[in-house]
Image (cartoon, rainbow, N blue to C red; front, side, top):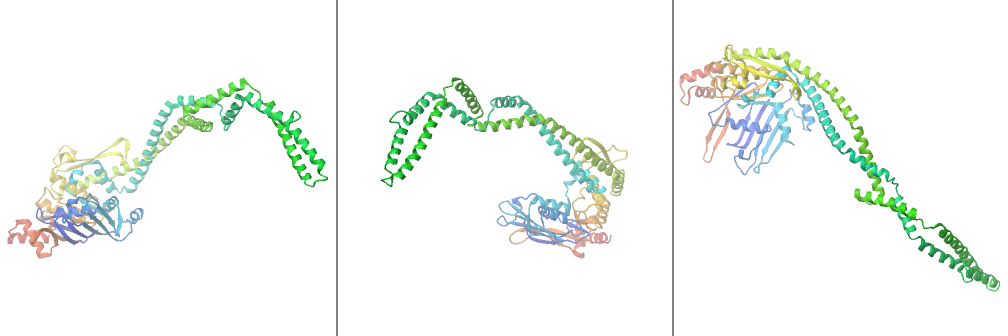
Length: 551
């Protein structure tokens, strides 16, 4: 329930505070007095788009604050899900800045306009004149039926199943497109893989082959160097080992007369052993190195193949080629197994389609079950509202595919004439007939909806007299279940309200401004009399106004 609205620096309003009570309240005022301004401010705090031109003072921010009593409306889960502080008296606030930016708050906690709008939809139903057009949309019509049938849980279950169904369809489509592309590439991948497999690459082998080729290519030069070095060590009277042996013998001869000779002897003998071992190793190395033209040819071919693959794949080592080979193996295997994965997705999709179908059937059955009661109630209300030959039907049919709101299609059909052809409401109903139809629909769902409040913005367009009186009675009856606020230009409706607010425009020395006041009984009689007779109050109009209030 709306408890209060506070407006600062909006349109023609400098500062305005309004308090509302439960039950049926009416708001009246002359054309251009600012009734639409009040509705516009309410729309902003409910998350509608903000425009910079709404600022009265272009240098100051606009603040609109609305207080709601929400203790009876099971909104704690919404607050928890959106990390908002839950208060039984919840305050929504919207601030619009001169630069066009805006901020949104719930109970003084910053939030997004999106969340503000979602919360607003749970708190209040604003019926503007534009909503008469919306009555022709499928989304609106199915929403009315679901509200009356209390299909919240059924619809939520269906939509969860539908979402999963859609995700599987998208994944299957994605995988099929990917598989088609990959199959087109399969021959190329297999050719590349075959080349790499035939290369028989082994980690570290490239460097070993390059070193071996280098050695074989200089075999004669290496053998000559090793042989000369060996000869210097071992052959002839002046070889290194022969001279070392003579030096060792000299130390043996003098070690009895020269104590340091023993130390020199040990060092010389150790060096001799090391040099003798080195000479033997030089000889063995010389014997192992042989020029092998066949081996050189083999290594050249092998390395040329590796270098060609490196150039083709833009890498610099055999190890990188091995990595590419393994990646190609995985790609080929994945493509080969892709059909199995897609078959699995198709099975999942088929199972999920069955689940969605069951949920859709339950939702459809629930809707179909309440349609006769809706048709009967709407027709009865329309007859009361001055359309004696009204006929209203809800046509249903099953769609070929699933949609977010179900598997069925609904259409509201209407005729105001006796034996008239039923057609879609937006095609045949006049402005006044649409207004009465919309009120009948709102009346129908007022006991079913969880909305705390409903605001009618001149829903009485196109009606007058006795019909307006009956519309006022219907709104008053609705107010037994929810808070109803009606912006009206008809005295018959204004006289039904528990509370009567008047919007007016006035001038001071500096500016024109809009204001709103709660009328006392005397002022209310005068306002109703003006609505009946115009600016000039007559005694007859005053008496008629009293009669309206008495009724």
